[in-house]
Length: 482
Image (cartoon, rainbow, N blue to C red; front, top):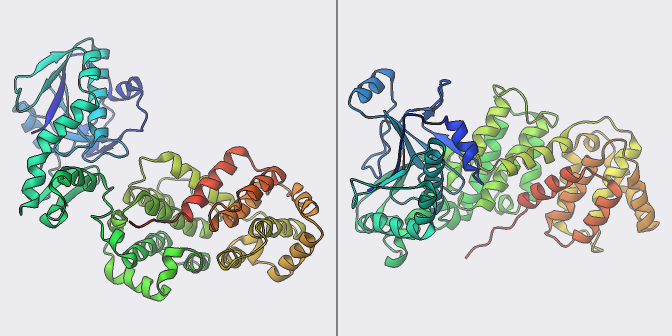
């Protein structure tokens, strides 16, 4: 069923040269690939099938690889980008390489395969040979012609021809397993049976890409959604094998301020994680990008709170490994920009800076100015102010009630005087803006005008301010239900 783009050449460019020349908009990730310093990764999957009756992978051992080579076969690996349903199966040949688009692939998979094949052909000075079931002998086209001919229209028509019967077979009672970037995904009759016939193919592709919210229990079950968000935090808290006091406070703060976590008693959610979530892989059930990003921010803050804001460092560090594992489990490992923004935003928030009382009061003042921008400190803002007082190092070690009283007194003297006090933060501009931005964003975007003024007076780094706004907007984003 696969549609394959083959480039036959004895002078194959290295895989890194290929990726650089392809000039792809999305970073390419690999699954099932081992790298030993050769120009190309070694495939670890003996074969990536279009569909399988059981989820089974074969690791390509040296002996098996040698046997395959004698038979003229090679192992495969998957190259994928954000939004890939299947990834592109890449296989080395004795003289060249093939890029195969599998059944139920997403438009992004087709675009990636064609771009990789055309770029390889251009670098090698040869043509691309396209083949499928209807044209097993294949036909050759130039790299430029391949990019035009096998564009979006071809991708959609090919996906329909290859995948429609599979979707119908599933709806009529057959279960299949499809290998993709995150391992095997099962498509069962219950997933498609009640879907209108003309929507079954699209729904199947959505499920494999991880975007079919109706497919995931979390989308239809608010309790499961809350349990999985809790699971992300619990995994983060246990990354180093112990629950620190700071992590416990952070969990408590999130239960008090995150809408999805406030639907059920905290103890019930924690018990449910222990009894109902078997592994971190369950986080893939979170049915929307909004929820997965929210889970990553919550988990990242749990780790940062116990590490003095540190979220980077030695790849062997358990906390760094936890961040990496969380990103992969949540399907965010291809969104490095978002991950970098979160890490950048939360590090200053939890890094202790040894400030004096005047700076500590300025931190509180920025928070209160954001909360009172509309003239009212509502219950959600009040809960967050209390949570920050318990979790930010510079605040929890002080008489917070006195700090809040002093800040309120300054605000009573006039907005401009209060804003002027934010001009001297002794190097804590990013921390002050992080706290103010979080308070401004907890209730939505109503305090946007005040946040702009606070940014002008606090003077955070421009790049940092953008990271903080993106991070806390993701943390408090609402999840609409249809």
